[in-house]
Length: 137
Image (cartoon, rainbow, N blue to C red):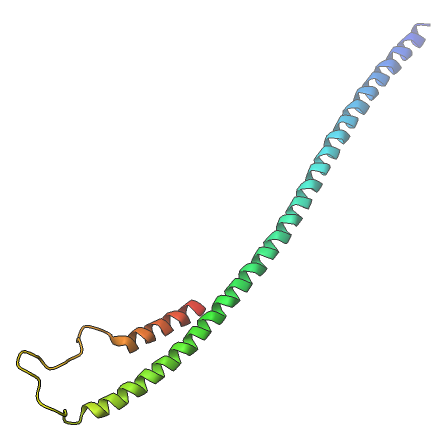
């Protein structure tokens, strides 16, 4: 009878240990399931952010392409203006070498000269063309 009682108590302790282990494993399963759900939500959020980032890059690329196109148009227009001014000033220089017509200027007037410190319109236009090329790159 004593042996039977010892075996019963032993099996009862073993049963209690197994029940505690089952409860522990169930809590672990619950915690891991919650962690998996949280990670799935984070993955979904990251996919949304990835899609938004792609759309933003596409929008920025369109803006950049528009800017590049505008800069190229500016370069072409300014190049034409520069060519026109070079032709105009070349013709003016050939006319300027002729003797002035009419009476000499009155006293007090000095001979007309370009300001030596100024770059001139043509250099300014060339600088704008160079800046447009740099912005394009």
